[in-house]
Image (tube, rainbow, N blue to C red; front, side, top):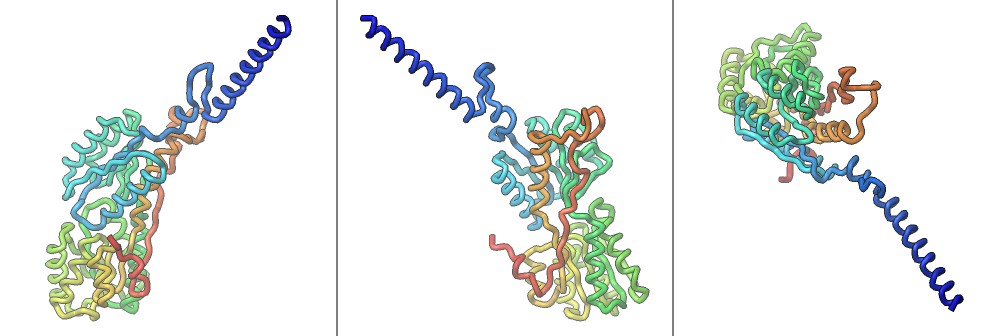
Length: 342
C-alpha cells in the first residue's frame, strides 16, 4: 500500500510540474503577464482597432485617385483601418464639417489636405484632444498640425522651370497657369520665377488663373495665346491647367510651336505627351503622402521617440516637421510607365 501511495504522489507531482511548465511556455509565447492578466503584445502593438481618417477634397479630379490608393496601401501594410472622406469641390466650410465628424469618431489619427487657413481652428481642436493631424499635399504651418507630408512645392517649381527653359532654348516669352492664392501653388510659381530668372532672355509675360477648372484653363490659355502670338512656352502648376493648355493649343493650331510643361499625370496629360502636344509634366509621388502620414502617426502611437525626458512638456511632437515626397519629370521617354491601368 505504501508503494502504491508513493507512486500516486510521484504522478501528481509530475503532472503539476508539466502543467506549470506548459503555462510558462504559453505565457512566454503570447506575451501574457499571468500575474496581472495583461497581454503586453496587445496593449502595446495591436492595431486591429486603430482607424486613420483622411478628409480630402476635389474628389472629381483624377489626381486624388493616388491619395485613395496610398491610404488603402497603408491600411494593408500596417494592419489598420482607414477611411477616406471627400467632396467634389474645394469648399472649406464643408471640409471643416467633415473634420469635426472625423474628430467625433476619436480616431488614432487624421490626415487632411491643407486647403486653407480656415482649417486652423478645427486642426488645433483635434490636436488639443490628443489626435495627431498630418497635412498632405498642401500645408497649414500656422496650425498645430503634427507633420506635413507632400511635395516640396518650391522645388517642384524649380524643376518645372528648368525643364521649360531647356525646351524653349533658354529664350522667349512664357506664361504660367495657377490658382492665385492657393497655399501649395504659390511656392511652385515662385520656383518657376526663380528658375527662369537665371536666363536674361526669358520673360514671364503673364500668370493666368485656371480657377481649378479645365474649361476655364482653355479660355485663359486661349486669351494668352491671342495676346502674345510669339509665346514660346507655357506651364501649369496644377492639374487642370495642363488639360486646358493642350486643348487651347490644338484649337489655335500651335501644337509644337509653344512648348508645354504640365503638372501631374492625368490620363489626358499623358495622352497629350504621347501625341506630342505636351512636352513634359512634373509628376508628384502622391501615393507616398497618405502612406507616410499613417506610418508617422502609427509610430507616434507605438514607437514614440524619447527626444527629451518629456516630449509633451518640452513642446516636441517626436515626428518630423515635414517630409518632401519629391517629384519626377515625365516626358516622351518615360510616360508609358506612368499610365494607370485602372
